[in-house]
Image (cartoon, rainbow, N blue to C red; front, side, top):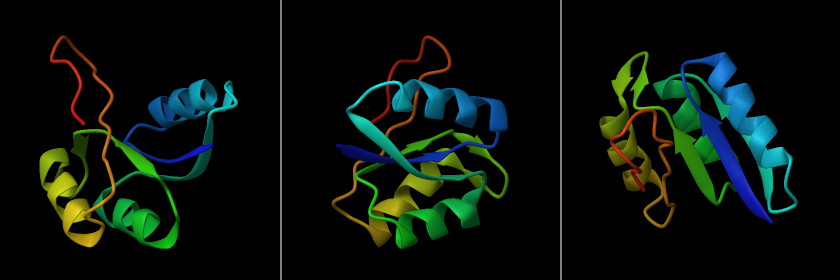
Length: 90
């Protein structure tokens, strides 16, 4: 089972991602975060295989947050769900 940490400023989006992931037998959600500090705390305190990130969050640009996560956990892959035609960022 893949362990996922969900991070996004919008509670509705976090809830939707959680419902979608938990509807399968392949994923389990290990926690949720809504900003820079709560995301870093979540990554540090859980054994998530992958965090999902929104690119616009209070206190940090999502791309900067990816850099911070990679410094903390270099082997962790980060997933940003697409919100427009821009595609995927992994």
